[in-house]
Image (tube, one colour):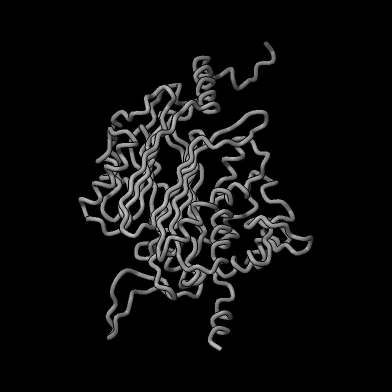
Length: 428
């Protein structure tokens, strides 16, 4: 027929039929999520959030997603409990209600940033000094989105093999980039001074002496420790994979390879306590030790994990998102390989970069709504996220999104603007 498009004529019919089947699977994924958790408490400051089959309206139908969170508190459990109870609602509140599935997934990275900052801002208004790390995972279809602050971590082992690191480590001892950010913003980083010039222990941020550069809460350590999360989003192949989310009680004792090896072939329900057991055998119960294991499996696959074929990966820590060696077959010339794909990754602590206007959703932020705390702003009172930008030709101060005055103050404090003024006024 004359209506056939020209670019289809050069593609073999078998490839087109295969592509159609693959697209059907991606658009209507048939998968099951099985999870398990385990913990051993030293201080009782670790908390978890496990929510499967959450629902939201999409057109005439309903879409489901799952949420897993790990909150490792310090200096008390208040921040961890508050974040567990409020973070998800704050993230969802930053997403427009009338988005299709693809738009909703694309909106998650920016909504997670807004939700983390709002949760921190609201908790600090309670004038409590506790803080918490957060590793927050949202699974929608085959797409996994992870947002993290602190030193809890999330790793992925897909069915094809390999290790994917989906979170960042915000310990000042190991993260030079964060040390530079804090000192350039007016903060101080150093070890504990015991007198006589002797310094001991890990790198800390002063005032306060926190070992982390990012967290929620911690109002007593100043604004240099920020709640802006590192966010990574990947898409699994239709073969699925296993997520492991652990607090530092596990990662201080075991490597990622050891964690995966010790539970390979076990169900998610059995794997989580096995990982905790292995970490305690390695270093004892020095800290709260918590583990969540999530298996994302095709619908036809039984919920009991089959031993995953381990695939050696050279330079695993460097080449996290590697490409498979491609064959010269005609099918692979036209079809994307069925493997893990990275969709998004950003770790900047600057809100002006994380909430920028370069985005596929023009209506992500409404004109008279604060992009962080979601309160209504009267006309003329909103402050552009680009206010004071160094390059006004590209980012104009009258372009949105907009912040309310209190969120703008928090943004400036986190980015170290006016730090000298605040320090000098505090010394009077």
